[in-house]
Image (cartoon, rainbow, N blue to C red):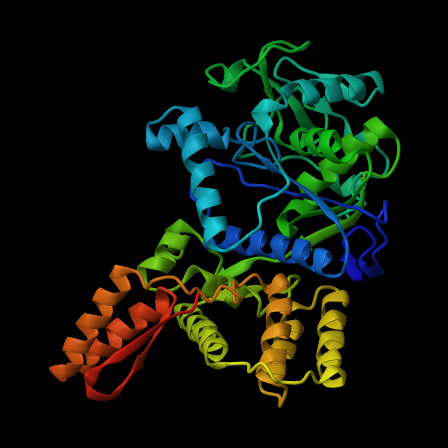
Length: 465
């Protein structure tokens, strides 16, 4: 398998440290607000990477953090703690905010059939490990202390900037004048390892005792401490958005390698942003969408996953209501094809032709994770003259990567809710209210069922997801 490595800026042959087990760390959510569809693209990409590794024969140990303290509104230690901000906004305690938005995050990822990590670790449960790491950095002469915080001194780490490609001199330029900066902070790029509960953080509600006084950890130290605890000092793959490259991941490398004295991560895997109508997603533009918004449009959440399959992880992806509706139709078409494929017991296997599709599918995955190409191979296979049985076998195998639940063609009783919608549609058709009939059909489809019109105004329902 070949992957693009941000550290080397080239596509490399993937060689895990331990051939029998890939160690994977993915940056998790800061749980102060609703996880939106941009976040969901990131977690779908992580999930596809994990599924691909497993599909290609690797075992994977996957760790993801939950940031529930220490992430300021400015990644460069400016602003206030996002969790404190979320608590003020919702008029809840910080702990209530953490629970609510953590639950919402996993509700969203579950709806998209994203496999949960093997280990989910909350920052507030690993303060001891962070303190120990800061103590080691201090012993190694890489920190300094002010009245407000303990900082990592980037001037003491000569290779700082190797991930982003920025020189240390560029990183050390002066700070902006419109944000608060600790007057004793030596360099703009120096970052806080521990914030003291003084000054602007005197009222911070989450705090712990430490050798440097009562306070709380900086955001960057969290990932290093937790990844090392669960995956060891050197890990195979660390993922994250491209926005993490210049600050967060650069800082992770500095502090981790400042402790262990060797390479921290072998492959840095970064994905691009999701745009909305070719604009950056923001609440001010009114284009900040969550999975709840998708459902309100009677669109199956898995259609969003299907949409994400259609763009390469290193490309900008774009969301529009037209594109998600098309994805919903495409997913339902795929389900309808599966429902119509009725293999007979005496069908023979066309081994040579099926192996060709499998080989091309694997090659797409192994070539820097070309999921759109793999999806195209699947559609080509369905349009081929392979037998129904072989088509289903291959598609269900491919779906181990796609994660669209295509093999869950349920034989359970149709839910009462769906039957009621079908009866309402039957009445609309009888009254020649075809716009209402079409609206109800779309709603039934969005809920994962198809409806087939039969003679004498009868209908047949099929469970497709």
